[in-house]
Length: 332
Image (cartoon, rainbow, N blue to C red):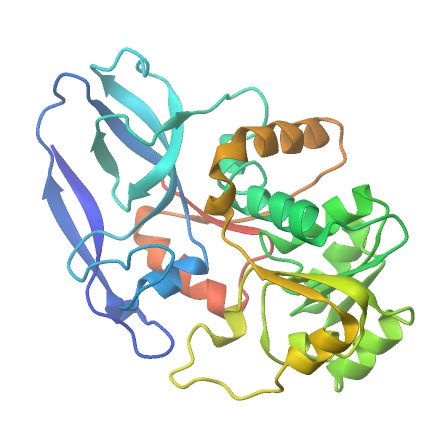
């Protein structure tokens, strides 16, 4: 059986382009004992994948040049010689960018099809939702009446962070990159939302939105927005460092204000984290997120691109702000 596959053609310098992606055809052997044949239904594209395109030590090994790229995938079992994964099962796992995948079942999690759309297990009920859940509730620990700022608030993680903070009774401010995204954040219940692309002075705008200062900051972006938030930190503020998408494509180390003095003066806590740090507690997070979703306390948004061949374009669109909420490619 033949399947399309997308390989890493070369490592990017700065912003990736279509030239980094190589389409190929792969021959798959017949399904053997203990194996399943998967048909890809949805592929997740995420900002962290940009880091994996580089060489060097990180929290996850880099993609290899010439090898298939991989990430979160929802797939359907169409052939099975695996007792726990009969034909018709829907699974999620970290899988290669292929139309069809032969798997021994390791690393696959069977997902229910009656709780939510299966694509949500790549977003709200998957890695982004769990990132929001643990980063906000374990690290930031917002209390009722406190002020929470979320950068990249209309992204897959940020919009969930804001809603979780509202569930905790906090006042929530989000930054996003378009008027449409700002309107969506207000629809979700954010108390304030700022379009950082059209705001002449982001520091002034954040100060006006947070007159009582900032108690919790969920940082997805870094850069000038983060510099401005640090000037507003209250005593014992908590900062969850989740991402730095503003600098992912920089070819030189950006120079900015040094935060140490501000952290020292406010006794603030800054903690970087990876959602994999909480792997043993993922079932807890999925259960709680599913419960809040079923109660109508959590909403989500998906930007869905159709077609296997459009996976690279959907990925590149992340760095132009094309997506609101979770960016997903519907393959079949």
